[in-house]
Length: 325
Ligand code: ADP
Ligand code: TRP
Image 1 (cartoon, rainbow, N blue to C red):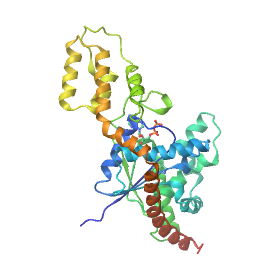
Image 2 (image 1 turned 180 degrees about the vertical axis):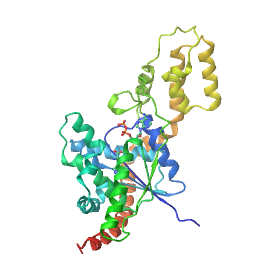
Image 3 (image 1 turned 30 degrees about the horizontal axis):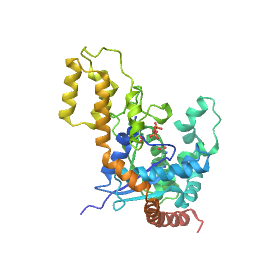
Image 4 (image 1 turned 60 degrees about the vertical axis):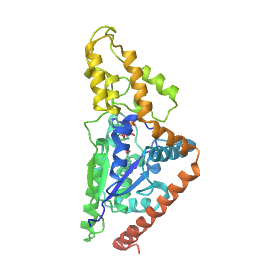
């Protein structure tokens, strides 16, 4: 039997998760857990580069854990934990820092984009990719699934691992493969731009029904009158509906658009019903988990124990390799 591959990824607890995150990221983690051994963590150390309110950080961290369990991460198949519960990553991050060329980090978008906008960057943001490399390398990960925006950071982790192994002339760190999540599926927001928390154009499956309804009714459409035929492929309502509906239901709605006599208000009502139906089990689970925080904390604790034991093995090997022990 083939040994399972180790999948690792991190999620920043920097705000509420929306259906763009669900279709673009969360769903893949749930799919990947079936065939592999998954380590998924909530990157609270990383979030400190943008969240400076301690209560907000604690709240977001727990919320993201609940969101991921609600969408179907199965604690029997996945080790879910908080990054900060494995402080050894900070130690590894230091060893890696000592061999990371400045130029490599200066080229990273996270830092470069800020500088280009004239925003003063701090050392945390500059060193962010090194901590991310430590996250990846400490668990000897085989596959790192990330969105396109994080691809460069995983490449940096690969470069650092190769350099470390070369300098110490030993295959200590595993060079991971990158898995880029399907980029064809950019979920549009209610204004037609990419759905993003920064654009305030998102719909969260974890909101109450009233808020979901209110937001769906605000999806931007053109001013074609009810009687006229409409182009479904130019409509945000239809684009969102397609993510959740069956092939048959998509065809039915497409024909309604093309035939005319079907208003955007009607389409929005159908989108609302479909959204509530699609996310019903996830919303139910979310409420259950919200009422059972001690269960969520137990999962995080168990995940952290496993993750930490793996991290300790690597850090001991690395300490010996560099001459600290
Ligand atoms: P946001 O843009 O809301 O800040 P993040 O950058 O935190 O979202 O993204 C977290 C994950 O969700 C990433 O893997 C990203 O690729 C994915 N993601 C975010 N928005 C979308 C979207 N509109 N469509 C598809 N995937 C998305
Ligand atoms: N930087 C990633 C993001 O913003 C989160 C992250 C931190 C991560 N460490 C990681 C992702 C290690 C993959 C692997 O989305």
